[in-house]
Length: 99
Image 1 (cartoon, rainbow, N blue to C red):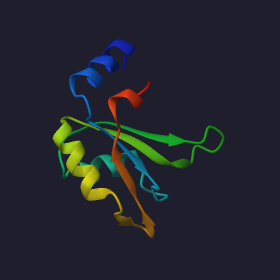
Image 2: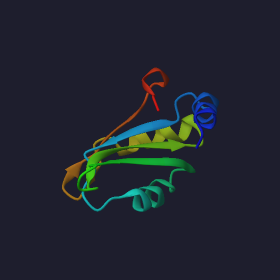
Image 3: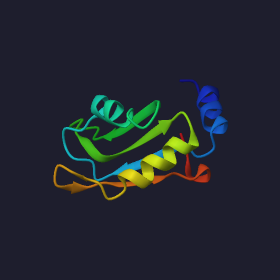
Image 4: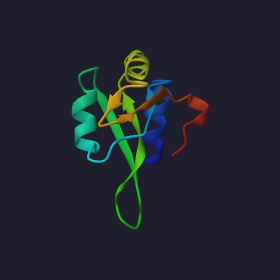
């Protein structure tokens, strides 16, 4: 996506991005998109990976179509146990979003 398009996505929906931390190994982009689609439309998934090994660093950002969906996801998934790991999930404030 171009920088201009990214800005439009961010400005259009003020707080529709969530931070997801303590992600278990094996829960990658495809699985995240599929899992979180039960809440609503997922527009972007960004899983951070090691440059050397390409392994997951254990955190990601997910963007949803609406603020409401992001809020519901953050409330439902914060503290959720997945593969013996307790997920950390919260809505990212617009001021803290950077690309």
